Length: 431
Image 1: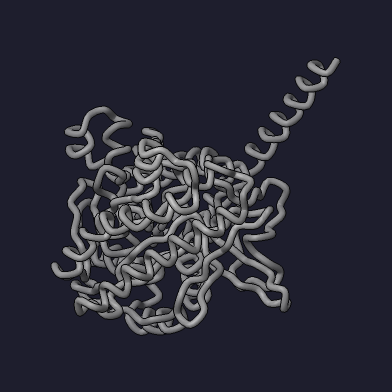
Image 2: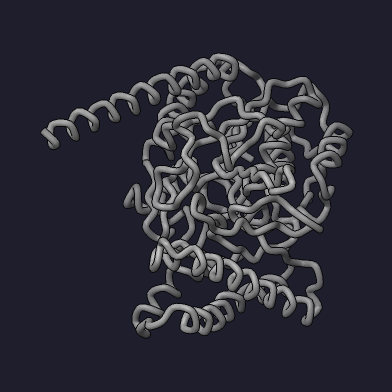
């Protein structure tokens, strides 16, 4: 009887999931009708949690070949915008090469994901040609030293708070925790959290330790003449205070911050969106409204200033309708009754929304529920936005894909086919 009941409950759960999946796909296809015939259109999409499930170890990620081929059809109407990286052993390019099992084919057919990585300083076209934007040799040389420093400091701290731990286990954890990205070296806590998943005090200690180690790296940068050239990106975060991103500490309902990234100032997604918009118009209309050599150091500081700057530079008739897709947005109600709002994708999605209002365009903001992966995120399946948004949140979502990245992948594939067959398909072939 117990086994029978479990089967019934499982079947009901699967049926509910399929119902949600089908309804959301239909809702997305309705959005497609408004987009498919537009003359000016640009998709800007985050990667992890959107087209890839979240995993504890980035080396275990995989990418759907069909998704990659769909993106190719969208040509220059699509760009990624991620705090991860294109290149390196943990880069998304490795996933694409592995998916096709033919690096030469990927290069020849231009199957890499075009757009910006490392928050906005690493630009790549679909053929894998990469250009760093606004980064000096001195900055690059300093960044190369960071992973080794992180490993030394984190090893000491782990041995102090996780006892006993063998040398073999310690080295394994360090390999998972220290992401040796070229432009965004990172401490990732997901595996360390798993050692004692119910110990909230330990999780908070690890979050504080990671922040302190990275702050020491900032001080070191200042001591060698790289003052104010780097900042700490906290993911997920609770917004900013005094210009610094706030850690979301673990509690019994939410694991909070899992990553602390050491990043270049200017490597922010809002600025990255400006670079992508500049390149899109440059490709399609053969001029660059912000200047051909525009880089993060030239950008305004806040979203309102970016909107005003953009309105002065880009005419309404060449401004594309922008579709922004992300998964990391947070909102936290404090004891004082105010909200702390943050998340890696909040800034660029808010900018997309505000540009739409400023230009009278129907820009779209889409959120993908990334809770189905190995990394804990609030679940959106029942329409509960607690921890993500709030009634007073100025950022409004046009679509919430509660059934996850697979639904998004299917939709973007169908949209790409429709867009390709439309007479409004991009007239430009190269950039």
